[in-house]
Image (tube, rainbow, N blue to C red; front, side, top):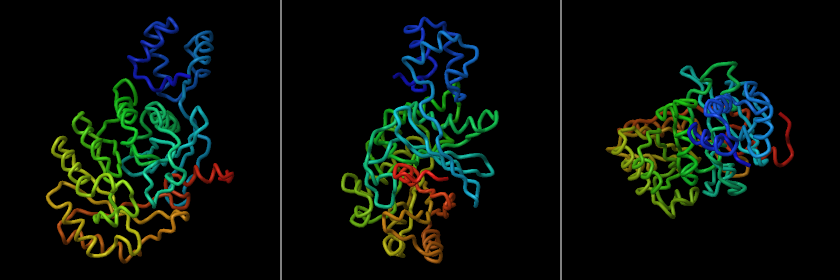
Length: 348
């Protein structure tokens, strides 16, 4: 089945005119409905005959929301999305004063094997298409009671490694930022990677301007390898050099994510090594309190140690703040809701 949300307006027009003898203005109407999250039955200005023909060969909406959890603490919402083939991924909507940020998934599962992440527990099932990533944004945007842009910011930080699905993720960036579509600027989009160095550089070379974030979590290669196997392929130094490359090409300040794990990466020596690695780079470090995932056996650092770690970095000349932890009461960590659903616990 053809997923229509995979297409930009030009591609959709070509496909519909060649395969269904549709006039260009009708293709534009269908494109508009797709970006509003409306299935074929709701496209009221499209003939019933055409809608019936489209249903036989095409999928209008790449995914639907089948479960929603809402935090009683901060209003964060967690969504379970069902793809047209039955696969499941998650998304999280975080509400801030400046707007609503949606965390989307780029793969069903993940093959990177990071020890602190729930989405990698079952391995990689498959990568999502560009339209399936876009479909998550459109589905949540449609909840905005008519607001044209309910989702104002996007982070590619859900299940999966975005740069392990490079072609589909970059096509998604083109689709979601298009003036014909949702028109969300790349400057309002963050992409988090565990450090796939060639693709980080490729992003810069191809002119993308997202906020690039490196999920680092330890500046010592041997220690990082214990929690992030990708370190065997690309060292900490190579990953940070790729950040420098991205900044030099784009002028966009880069971000380093650093999750504190009790007794593993939270000492002064770790802060010193991190500061040495990042010195001279236009970078901000987000310090994260570990979001508990019972299967990993990892424990977050204490509140006191977290504050000390930030003060160490600041004294060493590195910009650092604590990233606000949201949705703890609804299992905010990626992969947890999908895993629970697949295991048969579907209660909200």
